[in-house]
Length: 301
Image (tube, rainbow, N blue to C red; front, side, top):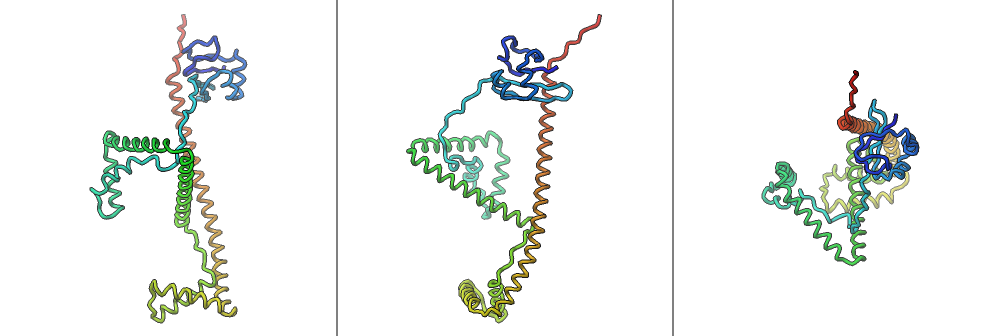
């Protein structure tokens, strides 16, 4: 038998009484058909329910959980730029206390401030959260006074900054991954091999190199490379070709390694997701059994 278990139910059918615990649906063909086919959109249309979900508690059969609370229309809010309207409460705390704990080292000072912040109670932190909220309110009021053209301009500029930050963060994360996974470095071209050799000759001769003369030598060696005969370039080109072949093999091995690491990360993420899902399901079942009305025991005469 399929049951419709109610959490907050006011309008399912005229005959349904408020606060009823569980109702058999075998006689209500439209509801039962929608329920068996899991056609949630059709069932919502029939029952006019705002929220409707299905649970599968083991041993208790299938249950529908519904709420007839009215759907709230989304409040109309002014579209704001994605940046500049919110300041982190911790940032306000840092700005207020940085000079008093400045150790001359950014890392040490930041670590000390972080420890002080973590020791603050909720009442002490509320001061900074209130300041952050006030900052946002003031920014919103200033923004709403602007002409529409200026608003749109600020929104577009802020969006561009946000996208640029995202690109920068992506590049940093990519280079960090390259370093952690041992990505091979691409070899230099033939010209760079020649220049490297010429700089080696300068060092061997005892010539002092500094910022002023290095750029001059670099231009000089680049021009020399252009005037070298083909047979003189051949040695450097052959070495560059060999290094590129070795690099290609190492790069292919590195790509396979990264692919396997990504598979493992995805597998671990899926396992954690399933674990959270099972935890939620277990908690739901416990709540259902706790709220379910006790069965009346009929005494045998």
